[in-house]
Image (cartoon, rainbow, N blue to C red; front, side, top):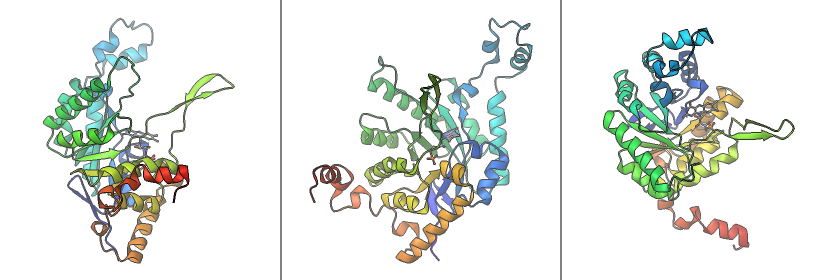
Length: 327
Ligand SMILES: Cc1cc2nc3c(=O)[nH]c(=O)nc-3n(C[C@H](O)[C@H](O)[C@H](O)COP(=O)(O)O)c2cc1C
């Protein structure tokens, strides 16, 4: 029987499926359920930098206690550490109850005072920290350099505060993505999560109102992480967790062949239930047995760009063939 163990962030995972940060991983019961269903690791629901920086005094500035008395009381009696303390409690409980790795997660946009708290994730024994940098480059006055410097500042500062492994979860919208990924490697990131799926908005044309867009992904979305995993896994000396649109064992095998160490799934579990984890792992085992692979190392990255005779297959040549009908 094939061995589906994998290494990610210096941690040994019994299989390559990580349940990504979401409401599936927001409670102790939730993460236990993921472990029971066979996940290799969990990333806890993110704490937002705004929650860490939460300042009750600021919330009360100019507030009148006679209006919204409940809210006034809540803020007046809530310490600055309210959210972070609760989050750290969850990390501690998850670490005490689970035997699979538990990765804490922070969702951030600035290198502000929240970074002074970064060391607290490791004090409660989180196995690693995943930093989800959620910058939407919508401000036309900000240049690419400006935005990239913000990423660099964030990564450098967090890296200097913690010694546990650091994963960086990013979107794909960079001017020179390959160069950016290398820069993150140079700054000491141990793994890249390719890619985050940013929240989408939509418009209801009957009500003429903005409404939430589709919250869950669709399988077609896995093509972009697949391409960038293949383009970068052979180049970079770090781990890649492929994420977005991964629903089946076949989707997972493709990402491993492209060079991912593991895959992150969320929508698959939300749409099809926790049983999908076991199905995907069984499909991986059966495929490896059919192919005669004993471990993931036997085929991981086999089809990454560096290992291909015609590396441009991951770039332009397939496109030219498809568009011009050249065989
Ligand atoms: C309801 C919901 C909540 C999420 N919350 C977070 C979060 O707090 N932090 C984060 O990094 N990603 C969050 N995500 C993104 C997922 O972790 C994942 O990266 C994304 O859904 C793409 O993976 P998928 O195609 O398997 O769903 C959330 C996704 C969903 C659907």
